[in-house]
Amino acid sequence: MRIAIIGAGLTGLSAAINLREFADVVLFEKSETGGLASSYCREYCIEKFYHHCFRNDFELIKMIKNLKLSSKLVWKVARVAYAVDGNIFPLNTPFEILKYPHMKLTDKLRLAIFTLKSKKRNYREKDDISVEDGIKEELGESLFNSFFYPLLRSKFGENYGEISYAWLLARVAIRSNRKYSGEELGYLRHGFHQMIERMEEGLDIRKGRVKISKNGKFVVNSGEFDNVIFTAPLPELDSRIHVSANLPPIKYQSSVCALIGAEKTVTEDIYWTNVRDRLSFGAIVEHTNFMPFEDYGEHLIYLASYSTPNGNLFSKGDEKLKKLYLNDLEKFGLNAKDINWIKIFKARYSSPIYEKGYIQNIIPYRTDLEGFYVAGMISKPNYPERSMNGSIKSGLEVAEVVKRDSGFD
Image (cartoon, rainbow, N blue to C red; front, top):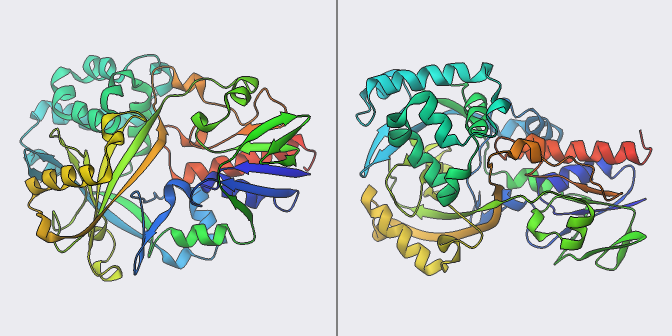
């Protein structure tokens, strides 16, 4: 039996690892192995888009163990902050939260209670309610305007009004495991590229654009296959296959990320700073406030932005984006003379937009087109937030479905 896997990101790699003992597996990848987890390498390697993991990322941690990389997985409490008018306010300890001046005390109490209760809630009941309506009804307009709106705007841009309240409730629930001093995060020291390199060992990965058709068997770039697992973004799927598989329409957002090597930091010890101001980026992620500076020899800073596939920000050229980012970064005390280099990375389809009713449209692995399977960021393990763990889990799960359908179990 021959199986084609479209996309050599973490989902495709995981599926291939699970299936290679049972079938002849070929992966097709039009760009770089690892997908959104691919890296930019200089004297060292660093992910193009910021990455970290959590204690409950069981499939990711198991994969790291199986690849004999556990000794490199380190855990650290990562400090977070909120930037308002160029000023940065840490929001980790109860004392820091009480000191934060841009939220009323009553709103802080409401937010704390809301977070504590989140794990026990049935978020699915709120899938048809917009996040704006849900927050305003439950927590009040003041808290929406002062805290949630800037975060939603920076993450979803003009699409924030379409987002389901269920998404927010589910996301708060999975992110509510905090220590007194902040949230504990993990990282594979020296980079997740080490994991990807070991995952791809021994796999047949073919680079270039992919064309899929079906005439009895599936034909992928002139080769015949019994089954196809599609792990790339759905807009890249041939429309005829999309219709035959009876897949629902899924809206996507785009990511635009500046990665900067610098002589200075924005803050002394903050890993993640959400930015309330209307700037070109919605978050500052200081990687070397999380991992040791000595691993890189310079400070590494991400400036994270979200757009739409045809949005204004995504359409800008790299040089214009660099000027825009650096101009806004000056508000936080970093000037051009402090910057060693800056790279712009874009992902046209980086995440689905979790709009109202999204839960009902989560796509099962098995489609209406016999032998054609779909997995990845639109699969159940990647709700309410796409992650390395969710991608690996969806790859392993779709492989199990294929094995059952093929009589391997």
